[in-house]
Image 1 (cartoon, rainbow, N blue to C red):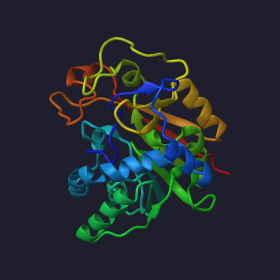
Image 2 (image 1 turned 90 degrees about the horizontal axis):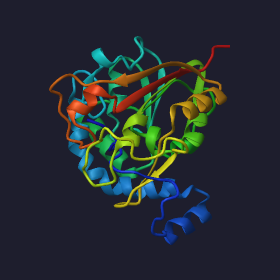
Image 3 (image 1 turned 60 degrees about the horizontal axis):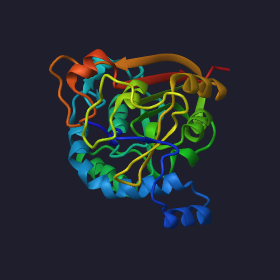
Length: 284
């Protein structure tokens, strides 16, 4: 149900990992952050497994959000009036959120770090006869002019796969006065209660520190994710000149199912496993 896989298991920054000299060397030569190169390689590798989920979401009559597929009518994530608005999806994956925006009259563009993911998005554009620009780049260095968009949005895209201290200032730069930033992430509570064991769901115990949460790495692949506590996120958004308008804690309906082993339905009905931030750039 998502453009990018949600986090599965995390090891907080500081955990010893195997060195990756090739990625480090390329990062030094290109001046591209190492985590950007590592995530690009992983997503090019994972892209094939997102073809069918992408097709399902392009085919959906109504947007559905997060791992539980919560309908837009219940979640209330998108702005009420998108007609004529210029939008950028940061970390678009297969591009289905941009497709949803286009069908509501917006003028979207999709940006993603993975060329393989964008290839799927182009194939789906051909299949559905719906065209919008697709750009291969990191959301930490978006190749657009200042004040280009009315909406920047990310569902498990830049929102967890890019450094928030890089991509959120970029998103703020791209927004016009009055523009909105909306992004969906794993909840802080989920990140604190998810075991290290593969495919083990979140527990009712705190398993890692809240203070200092930022960069998370995996024992089983080279990907890098970023998750901030609420206080750090609030301070970052405000430093970027954004006004926080809402924080939605998503709750699935009874009996909802998911293919992701992040949490049981019982857990997700008691505590949020996903949250959506909404912020706005003040009007002049």
